[in-house]
Image (cartoon, rainbow, N blue to C red; front, side, top):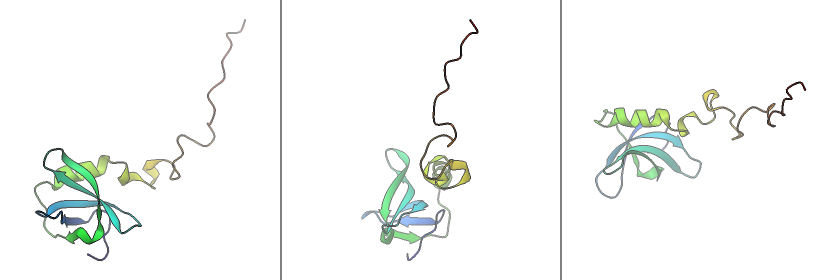
Length: 106
């Protein structure tokens, strides 16, 4: 598969049986983060090489659980308005210090 977009339905070649997955994020190093089903843990995120991905057209039985995982993962909101600041800073820029102690008026 040449190019993979986030949200694409894919089959992941694991060396054994192909596993259905959904692409969460495409990384620069020819890898992709994919939501896929683990036999023991259930839906998980895995980083796989892009050449191990093949496009699929039909929805699979586990796609609903995978879509829920993608929706609640932090990868899905990276760089968007919902994810807060894109640079990884926490909080707002104008509120870097804690509030001072307030006296009681004595």
